Every structure is written in structure tokens, then in C-alpha cells.
Image 1 (tube, one colour):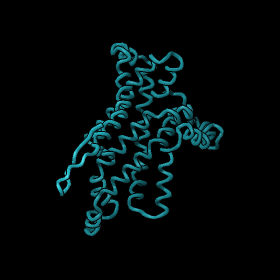
Image 2 (cartoon, one colour):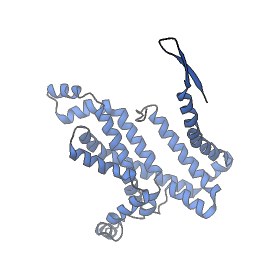
Image 3 (cartoon, rainbow, N blue to C red):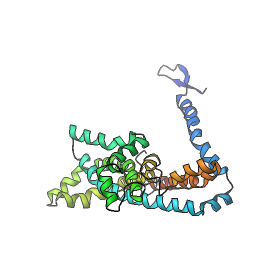
Image 4 (cartoon, rainbow, N blue to C red):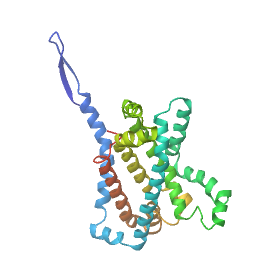
Length: 271
């Protein structure tokens, strides 16, 4: 174990542990636990086999469904999440805390429970679900079901991250804008949003990554059309682990791309 020495004012040398090095060693074990499985995934299958399987029509369909649904979900989350985040950032009190708790709840619910919650509202046996089926627009086993599931689990990332971004904006700048005769909406559009932009982009990026990786709620709401996580599960159950690798690697690539966005054009909320 690392040992260091310190000298006090009287000149006495004391010997003690270098706790920073100890922390690095202990934390390094967990870091290896993150890295080794990811490296192992990419080394498990030859690159040529991965490329060949990724072009499989089933995989292409799953990737298309995931990208389309995650994009729509992210747009919905942003459209409705930003106003809520702004209100939360500029409001205080018990009501705000209650609303924030509701926003965070989907993040802590098990995904399958989230799917069951959604089925009580949008499922075939619910009034809304039956009305949608009668109108020829089913809300389950459809792309709409995928979007509903993804929006439920991913939209909190937009709200929570954007709230922090709005709170980081110096409100004296907003007051200055208002003192010059600009309304609240104009001030928000010309002052607050540009300054909070990097943080908002981080939330949007996290929401997209979470939506495209959603599995549990999507399985409950819409087994078809298959998204990439569902396709991974089906390939694993029906054909074995080797056939699940290509889509898993594709999803890892998307996660890495999201991380790259967070560390370049966006403002990483965890730095």
C-alpha cells in the first residue's frame, strides 16, 4: 500500500498512507469492470462477420425503427420538456419539488413497470387504447407504442438537464433584458436559451441515447416493430449469443457517439 510522508511545522516527519493512490487502485478495479466487457464484446466476433450480419434485413429494419422512433421521441421530449424545465428552474416551493419528483419517477421505475403503467392508459383494454384502435391508429404493437415507451423513460433527461442549464444562467442578464422592454418570451428566446444551449443539447443527447437503448417498456408496449434492443433479445433467445453481437456493437457505437457529443459541442452535465 502506498505510503507518504509529511513534515509538520516543528520539523517532525510523519508517515501516513497515500489515500489518493488507494482510491485510484480501488476505483481502477471498477473501471476495469466497465472496460473489459466492452473490449471483449468487440473481440468476440471477427469484423467481417459483424459487417455481414449488420446488413441483414432484420437488423437493418430494427436499426431503422430505433433511429426513427428515438428521433421522434427526442423531439417530443424536447418540445414539451424545455418549457417544463424552464418553469422548474424559475419556480420554488413545495409545488416545484412535487413536480420534479414526478419528472424523476420514470428514471427510478423498473422499465417493465413503466411499460405496465403505460398499458393501463394506452393498452387495448383502456378507453384511450380502444378508441385509437377503432380509429385505425393502435397505440400498442406499433411505432406509436415504441415512441410512447421511449418518451416516457427518456424525456426526464431533457427536463432535469435543461433545468440545471437554465439555473446556471445569470438572471441579472434576464433582468437587464426585461428592463429594456423585452418580454419574458423574447428574453427566454434571445438570452436564456442561447446561454443554456450547451446544457440543453446535453439533455437532448442523453434522451436520444436513452430512447434508442430502451428495452423493458418497449417490450411491454410494442414487441413489433422491433427496435434494436428487442432484436438483440430475440436473436439471443432464438439463435444464441453470437447472433446478438452485431446489434449490440451497433448500440455501443451509438452510445460512444452520444458521449462524443457530450464532450464536444454539448456541456457534459457530469463534468
